Amino acid sequence: MTMATIQGPDGLPRCRWCAAAPDFLRYHDTEWGFPVGDDQRLFEKLCLETFQSGLSWRTILAKRENFRAAFHGFDIARVAGFTAADVERLLGDPGIVRNRAKIMAVINNARRAADLIDAEGSLAACLWRYEADPERAAPIEAVATSPESVALSAELKRRGWSFVGPTTVYAFMQAMGLVNDHVAGCVTRAAVARARAAFTSPVSAIISPGPR
Image (cartoon, rainbow, N blue to C red; front, side):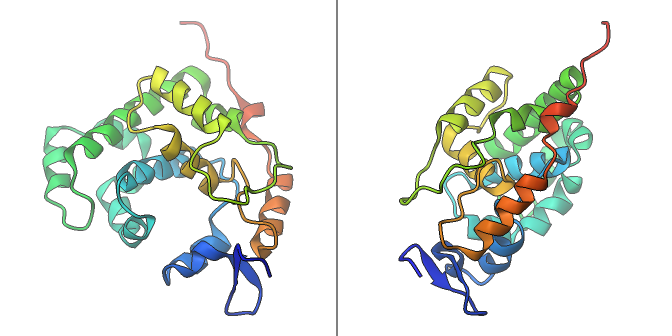
């Protein structure tokens, strides 16, 4: 077992960070790094990363079900249609992070996501263009950005998204499987690699918009 891993309850090695909180082990084993091609789930994660800015993932994970309820499951069309009344409702919800700037960013980003889907047919197709090399080794030391996250951040900002800096985008990419950052020796790294190998990239499913 390397210094980058800890022994899980089953005796198998896992990324050391998953021992930081009780909820992290299941999240590490079943979600983090596994590829996601569903627009709604991808949008949800981008929103949660927005709310995490300046906070810990432990805080956001503990409130995730509250966020889902407050934002109607992060349905892109519904969030894009939020009004000033919804903003006030969210600011009064003690189950979420009540930050006006972040709430407004999520609503703005839903509208930008709807525009992107209208133009290209899929949010996933755009995001997965920035997939890291599947053979890329996880960094030995923790890193906060990558060339791919810098490029994707710039593209989203160009399209009018907010709260999508390279660090936020990199955390999103790690979680949604656009990069496999489970450390060498982690039992879940191989499972993620198999999932990525079997995953059909949404990039191949880009739908060209019809005549305007």
